[in-house]
Amino acid sequence: MTFDLLSDEEVFAVIRDKNDEQAFTALYRRYDKRVYAYCLRALGNHEEAQDVFQLVMMTIYDKRQAFVDGSFAAWLFTITRNSCLKAIRNRKNTTELNEDIHTPDEHDGRSADFMLKDALQHAIKHLADEFREALELRYFDELSYEEIAQTLGISVSLAKVRVFRAKQQITNHLSPILNELK
Amino acid sequence: MTNDELLSGYLDGTLTNEQMLEFEARRSADPAFAAEVDDMVSVENLLRKGTDTAPAPVGFLQSVESSMVAKIAAASVGAVGIGHFLSSSWGWIASAGVVAVGGGAVYLALQSTSPAPKPAPVVRQQPVVSQQVQAPQVQSPITEPTSPKTTPKPQPQAPDNHVTPVVPQQQISKSATAEANSPNSVLAELESDYAQCVAQKKTLQCAQIALQIGNQYRQRNNLQKATEYLNAALQQARTARIVQYQVAAHGSLGLVARDGGNTAEARLQLSKAIELARSAGLAFEEYQEALDALR
Image 1 (cartoon, rainbow over the protein chains, first blue to last red):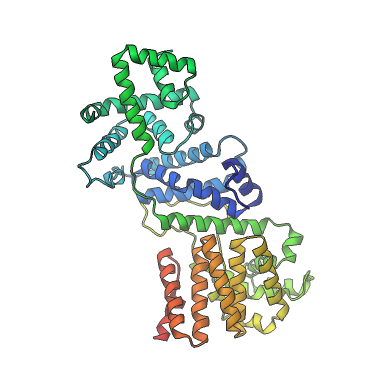
Image 2: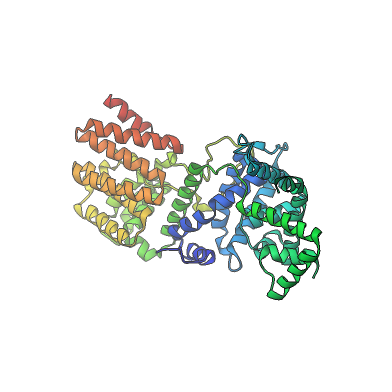
């Protein structure tokens, strides 16, 4: 059976109702990198990201009966977010974010593209949590506003506002560079 | 609408025709707004391109996937109706595990008092008893992450969390008893199960059954058929991305090659088993010993 044409929710229903491992594989491969990237962004290091990623995958399977309707992506990222928050709360010592995580091509520092990307990363990192989280869900995790709202437990209009405000703050931060490049 | 509302809609591509006309009018009339739009569009494009993040460790993601698939497959077997469950060879395999856990005395009592729904249940149970008992080296990365951790370990909660895939190499010595009692019908039934699962494209089960058949043939010294099924198991395991089974298939192929006097092939297969097992954090001592003995 091919799952390519089925929605996330339809594939998950097959997993939930039939324990179909191929359905799980199909859905897992749609989200594994995105969920891992989310964990890595939230936690700042691979060790914790791997711990939480495993926990998330276990949780979505163990709690599969709890998902009946709505967006699977929103449900998945809600679980991921809550798991990351719990991991952060459980930290005995605050771990500084690993600066290397977001700068894999830092040696290519001469290009304008790098300048912008670097500035963008810097700007995102300095956003208030509520704005950064909404922005990352929108652009890195590719969620719709409805899914962002569901994930964060806010209204759709507030999700839109947070994403827009985040982009405005980033634009302000990047304006000098953008003007320089014009 | 405010400028922000128009700009937000413009960036999201949700403006109506009327709103778009309004937006363009304000953009033309207000240079400051036009500059803001230009900057916001640049940022929008930059965000849509995404930022570079450290790549996810592929091996890690695969190992989690493998473990979850094995867990689901195990749950799937457990969910089958009891009648069908007991009438299938997989039902007997799982039954054997339960019996093993229950203890030898209970096991014997069950054997003597329970009517067998199918002939020769003991034969089907015996090899897997050893498998169930000796499965600890097949560790799910879900429950036992291999890398050092900085946070408390996730505590899996489901009783079906423990995954014990087939480890054929572990069965060989103890399954000798079963072999002595095993009629050819058992092998034929396994082959029938295999054909059925191939038709259903259940790659995980196919890999399990093919490994069983391959090792059965190896015990019967039918090395050609053993190789045939073990290669099939390897292919299925690769498709299902179950590293444990790939290790087992390579290991068994190595032992078959050794039994057949093909030392070069034996070394190659055993080395592959060891390499894969090492990278996935699985046990490989048995293959290492076999490889060392070839040197």
